[in-house]
Length: 305
Image (cartoon, rainbow, N blue to C red; front, side):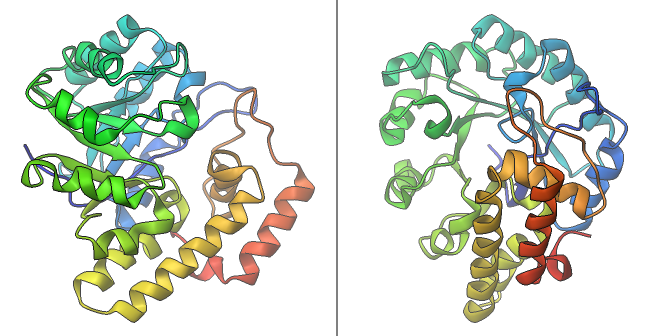
């Protein structure tokens, strides 16, 4: 099964001021990501507020992103996880029919998954909805409490889910990430999901592919880390990683990537609207303060264009 090379973006879902999905910016959004070095998108996930979307909206967004692909190589992976496995399977079936490159699912936040077998069964039923597409498990336990061993999960899923491709690993343990990467001589695709630690992951042999959220506005620097590493320019790679951490430090003071990061898109010229309830949007005063902090680190000279 093909392994992803380069960085995939986890895009925000555009909304109108009334809170309805706004599909109009998606073609320009896709073109901007491509222009700044991103290899595709992982839609309707955490950055995309996927759990706050209706099933119909999620399907229409999949169709819109697939229709807006800048070229044939631009990958569209659709997150189909939900609290209802039947809905997830229906979303997976739709993604396959619509022409998605792949699908993925995080563990349901309710009911909380406490055992590896429960997680494998959940993924198995969803993946069966699109047997011709690569299926990625999206490991982000901070969002759903599924603090399970991913190495044990790989072992249990191996041979049981025919289209299982790997894991989008959004967790802090580089030790576990590397154990998973080395499992069965690197059989599965371990997509790095922590933009703040791309460089140390590269040093271990990982991060050949990844899915990030801050790539929405800082893709040039993040893809630059990988390019510098491949050229043997460790000093440049360090500078770009440190700058990327500075950007993350700023957004963490403004309710993180989903809220603060989405507002940055407005500041770089692509207004994607507000977040849906229950997220608390930035005030005008907070936006001004965040802009000042980003200016202080030279963000607007290095951000996506």
